[in-house]
Structure formats: structure tokens, C-alpha cells
Image (tube, rainbow, N blue to C red; front, side, top):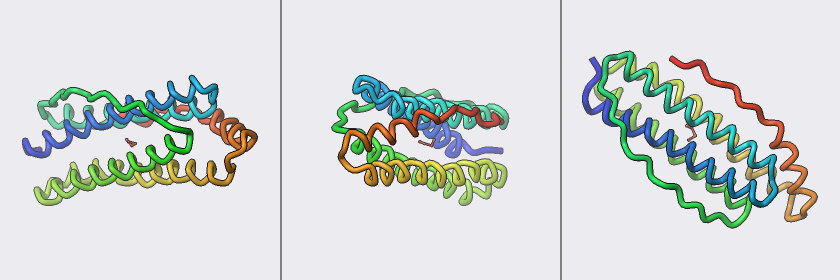
Length: 169
Ligand code: OFO
């Protein structure tokens, strides 16, 4: 049986995942306004993935008979300076999310909730990819330098990202 504490923390994380999607959409809108449609595409796809992360968590809570809490999703701060600023903020955000997933894992381990530990392992693995992608963006932009041509080259690469739904549980 899943504990109330675990359910509360996971409901909070479900909200955080929706927030991540909202945050990335705010970045996509900023980038679209700057005519960087490849970057905007990348962040739109990222937002879709975040919704999947939230839904996966909700589906798990429902399956184990928990009463899911639906918390208010805060508004993201949409003050961005540049594509590099956005990519750095993305990396910082994903590092924060990793720390939140680890806290969930800490609770599951303290409570010897083995099925939740197993479930959360997917998020631990996913965060490796999330941080890798975000730091990859920062590095690509550094390599591109501050030239318009370099920025457009990276923008073109980012246009290729395609949304693939995760297998919902
Ligand atoms: Fe859900 O991984 Fe990003 O935030």
C-alpha cells in the first residue's frame, strides 16, 4: 500500500512535470517570436514529453489506488535574454528536476515501497537523458559562437526533433 506521504510527493511531482511543459512552451513562444522556428520546435516537443511524464505519474497513482492531488500550476517567468540563456535555464531546470526525483526515490526507499522504487527508476534514467540533451544544447550553441550563421545552423538541426510518445503505464 502506497503511503499518504508518497502520494503527496508524487502528486507534487506530477504538477512539477506539467509546470516543466508550461515553462518550455513559454520558451517556445519566445523563440518563435524571434523567428527561430527550429529551436521553438525543439521546445514544443520537449513540452509534449513533459506532459507524458506527468501523465505517467498520474496513471501510476491511479493504478495503485491513490487519491491524486491536483495542485495549481504556477506561471513560468518568461523573461529570456537569448537562445543561450534559454538553453542554460533548461539545463538548470532539469538539474532541479533530477534532485526532485531523487527526493521521491529517497522517500520510496525509506518506506521500502519496492513497486514505487521500480516505477521511479524510469524517471531516474530519463533525467540522465534530459540533462544530457540540455547540456548538449548549451555546448552546440557555444560551438556555433555568436554568429548569425552559427545560430541558424543549430536552429536547423533543432527543427528535426520529432515527438515520440512514451509508453504510458
Ligand atoms: Fe520531466 O523531465 Fe524534464 O523536466
